Length: 341
Ligand SMILES: [Zn+2]
Image (cartoon, rainbow, N blue to C red; front, side, top):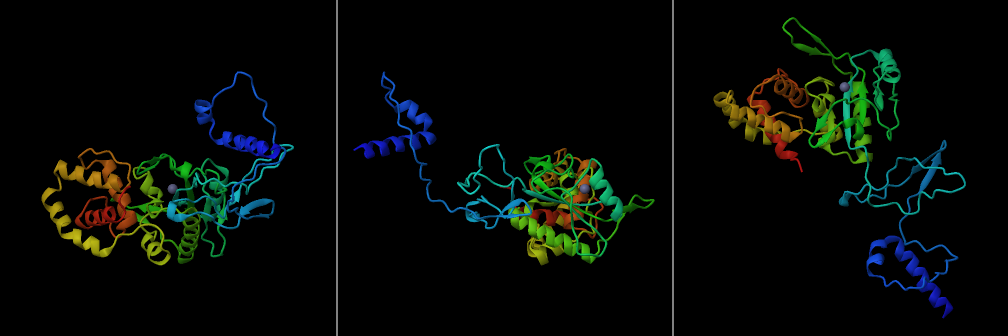
């Protein structure tokens, strides 16, 4: 009997931890307070699959990913675990990993440094800008890590994509050593190529990061995509299609879908190029795809720069910032393939 009472007392204790509000509303309160016997043993936790943790050089890591990707749950990663060490207490890391959590790292942003190797390292480690990774051009197999993936690097600046702003908060930044562009007398930009070794390094790094954090293809972007009026990097020489075709990362359109849009797109450009309604339609399509756009109904400077940023990424053969039939067809094919949720 004594044992039964104890079990009832214990179950009330466990229940009250999770249902405070219900208890307050529905429980009859006796006039004389009843002292509840304190349990002398720990409550038995429910059976939960506990992630294994290993320690390497003083840093703890999950060794298995217990996430259920089909439920958009990425509960535990292979990544490091940063834990409090309160004086006199032990923090138990494998006790109850909560389902209600996800990664802060939801974007991957690519840049070029516009500087040679040595200056890239100096600027990105000593000044007010930084990135998580720096891909050098020195022909070795090293990639430099400058910032912990769990921490914020300062690479994106004022930025936006779809419903998100200030992407430093939610992104991993990769800087690639490359000299950027030169401008001729007519104002045309000519961009420096990336070496094959660099592209392979970047691709392997991107693949690793998007896999670990389950970063969506629509969130693997150029700095110029998230800040089109300010930035050109990594520019039209960066082979986004190669990354899509050979490493299955990032976005690319389906050629067949583009062809279905092409004829009507060219007719639109010929017949309606200067109609405010058509310009508004283009701006809306760019905004829907993800670019931070004002819907002015005019071919203004911001719209031209945004079209140029789109062309750097998806139609790099000609990046004059002027909407043409092919660019318009590609934009529609991308919106069809990657609709905003
Ligand atoms: Zn950049």
